[in-house]
Length: 168
Image (cartoon, rainbow, N blue to C red; front, side, top):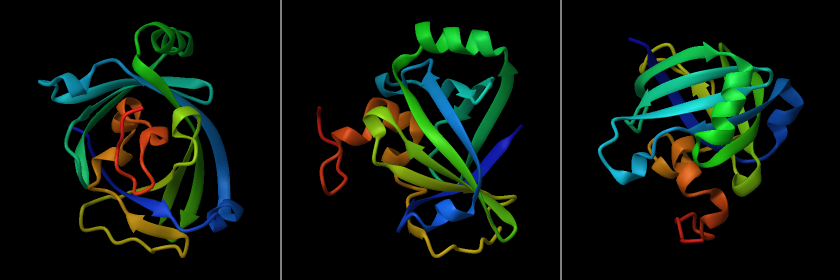
């Protein structure tokens, strides 16, 4: 069984951009509606540059959760996103930034989530320590609204100034 262990942070500023060594466009859509109850996992298709994959994650919120990922043909991934995604497709640009022993993934969201930027760092274990860059702000690992699956249902454009989800 695969286990994803990661921490999520908001950013204080854009100082990380000068350190970014890779930039990739992502488009991802969910194939099940977890908000109707009964779901134990999120199932998504993601286009990452010129690759596609299907991903299944347990619906745990927090530092670690089960994750399974399988490569699929790009053309199939594009068709699935166009015809089978539940709700809007999330688009973002992901930047990679090396800090100490870890590579941080910084996502600048587009579309209905424009204006939101979240940094993630994957860990080898829950006890793994990370070097905190000066641009890393508030940790949001345990805040549901910052997860991509939540952003597909309640996009950033629907948040109030105090980051509460409002209807739109």
